[in-house]
Length: 249
Image (tube, rainbow, N blue to C red; front, side, top):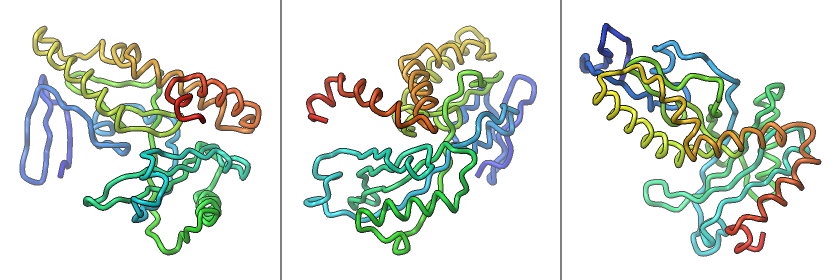
């Protein structure tokens, strides 16, 4: 377990339960509550998005999410004051098929209790009793174009840096961050320059960065009182994409 991260001269010191490690570069890939982010003094950034979820064993032959290899996004919960969505995603836990059912909220004025109440109603619609499952809470950090992504000898990736603000996807972003970070590190050693002054620009201008900035604008327009007007326009735009046309959505 990492206890402390600090810059000492031209090296980073990482202190763990088993001793100290020293490196020219440390990558903060330690999630939304990143110790690296806090230790190196990165700005706190925007309010974190709250997500509640349960993980339910699924019948792979009958459950639609697994049968059709799809995930569900349901925005109708916004009618109850949620600035977010209800979702279902198929997954494997210890090799066993499950469906993760969750709800996200971008409304800073909504209490966790109210979000749980709405989540309970959404689950009940689908015949699921929230009291029979372990309820988990996970905050999410959305990408912030005004934020910082690097400091000398230190880079942030994945949820430490910020992920998709529209529907909370983080795994694909983590993979693309990894490519960008590795390229920046190779360049740093080649040029003996560990300032990483160009890393943010590389992230923002990447395919991932441009997509996330577009999604940030969608999220700002969608997650709020004006969602009734925004949703039809968003669905119309989505239907123009090849994948959704093939699915006849």
